Structures are given as structure tokens and as C-alpha cells.
Image (cartoon, rainbow, N blue to C red; front, side, top):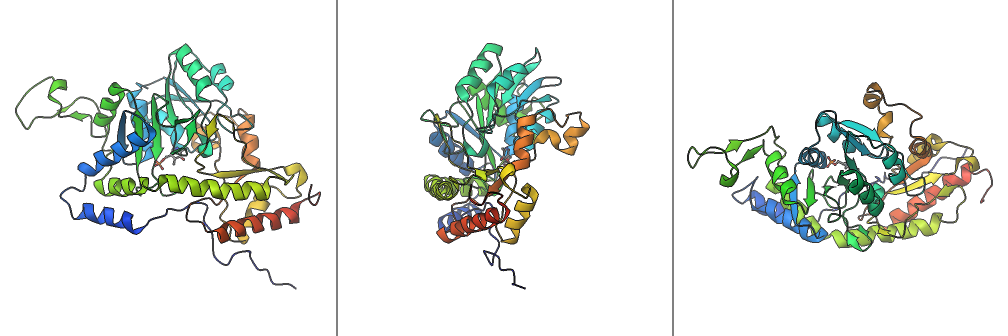
Length: 395
Ligand SMILES: *Cc1c(COP(=O)(O)O)cnc(C)c1O
């Protein structure tokens, strides 16, 4: 019997941070400074991101989920309000609505872009709809023009979940300056990291001020906003906020990482070009479709299996690739199928496009620290496994 030899000896994850000496020095500098939190590194990071995406304001949060919660608060989402989002996302895009007592309404995806389908959004609007949370899935910007047409018509706030899309552009303009509020995440698998971290960018001063106050207990020290004056020590808690502050340690890492964002995005594009070239002609799978109005910064590379041309299902192919030490992943289990949402009454079968995609999709490793050898290993392993399961042997 022949001994099984995996394509790789070591496991290749689907995503990973790239930290260099400059990042380490930036963090050490803060550790030796007078501020570990609520210091100057926070403003620096906020200004850096705001300038990069061309937004007026940015507010840093302890993580992207907290930032989404803040955005829902600032948008005025409350008990009974309905917010429309996509099922093809991480749970946080929907959970933030529940934190505010709102109701999540899922609208199905477009089967080509995998992003929320604007016509599906419009079908689900009621007198209780207050906001839309579209997600730039894998980094591909959502159809903002069509979404804003709907938002203006029904007076809805748009909170763009751009956790995947730092560095992406829509019709030549940076994601982060285009929506009422835009959320970025700095989790280690995202484009740049602060360990944990999130940010909202906005051009709206009112949202900005609410977000600043929300992330720190609902407290203000702004004299102009206070209703009483006790003395110089006085601060005022005006609504129930949270401690969602980012530390200066995180912000310093984030700022240092921002210096490399363009380079990281270029490397990601480089890798996906190699993938597209290798997989573009294979009938057994579909490579990611990209609409012409957007330019993705490529958080994820999602392939779709054409199961009628394969003798194995997604699970078998997924497991076979893992045995080759390729860190494949599935982004995402549609949110309405998660047990918590099932308990809330969301039904399987209600969002057929997202559910069908879920059965057929797989994310391949994609991160700037990948070497060309790593990329070749992924291509080699996918070719090997698809050839094994192919019904048509090459078509
Ligand atoms: C990562 C992510 C989030 C949440 O960000 P955290 O910083 O991990 O809290 C939200 N939405 C999407 C689509 C994400 O990928």
C-alpha cells in the first residue's frame, strides 16, 4: 500500500497577521509612555483611518462587534425596530441589532456577488424598518447606489459592515466614506490588526458625538452638553453606554499596521491573481465573480463547488484538503441557521440563495505573509483533490 503524503508537511491557516519590528517598537513605545488607554495613540489611529478612507470622523472601539453595537445605538435602533441585513455574514452583523432590542430581518444574497440583493431588501421593508446593515462580503463592495436609492426612499440609516473591505473602493471612492456609518474590524485575520479592535467612520457629527459617548459609559465631559455644573471634577452620564474603549497599546499596533495596508492589499491581489489563473478554467468550481463598479481589497477567497460535476460533497472535499494540511474554512454558516436564531423562529428554507451557497462554498488560505510556495501548495492540493473527485476528468 502506498503511504499517504500530504501536499504540505505543516498546516497552512486560512488567515494570519503579519507583524514586523516596526509594529513591535510602536507597541513598546506606548508601554513606556504615560498612557495605556484613552491617550494620544487612540486619536492618532482614528485620524489615520479617517484620512485613509476619506471620512471626517472615526471612533475606535474595543472590537468590531462593539463598534457595530455603537452604530446601532447612534442610528437610534430600539425595541421593535427592524434592521435588514444579509444572512451570509458573521453573527456580529446581526447580533448588534439584538443588543439594542431590535429585530433582524434577513434579505437573501445575489447568487453571483454573494452580497445582499437590493431588490430583496426592498421587498422586506415595513413601517418598522429603520436601518440596513449591508456587508461587503470578502471585500467586494455592496451595490451602494441601489442600496442608497432604497435608503433615501424609506428614510433608513445605512451601517456598512466593512470588516472585510478596508482598502476596497466603490466607483473609485474608498469604502468608509460612502455610508452613514462604516464599521472596520482589526481582528488578526483582517487586513490590518490591533489584536482586537474596531472602528466606525462617518461624516456625520451627531453620530460621531454619540459614538464617542457610547463607548465610555454614556459619559460626557463636554461642558456644552451638560445639564448641571457641580465643579471642575464634574462629568455627566446621560445614557447607558458601555466600556468599549480601545487601549493605546492596541491603537499603536493598529497605526503601525496601517502603514503597510497598501502593501498588504497588493500582496492579497497578487495571490488571488495566481488562484484565478489556476482555477479559472476548472469546470468543477466557480471562482469569485467581481462586479465592475467595485475594487475589492480581498479579505477572503471563496470558491464554489459545482457539485453536479463532483462525486464528493463539500464536506468530503473540505476534509480531504485539510488532510493535505491546507487550512480551508467556510465563511459563513448563514446566520439564520445558527441555533440561537433558529430558536428565535428564523426558518431554514427562507433564504434559498444563501443556503445553497453555504452547501457549496469554501475559503482558501489568503493572507499577505503567504509565500509563493504556500500559494503553489494550495493550488497543487486543490488540483489533486478536485481531480480525484471529478466526474468528468477536466470538464
Ligand atoms: C470580523 C467581523 C466582524 C466583527 O469584528 P470583531 O472585531 O471580530 O468583533 C463583524 N462582521 C464581519 C463581517 C466580520 O468579518
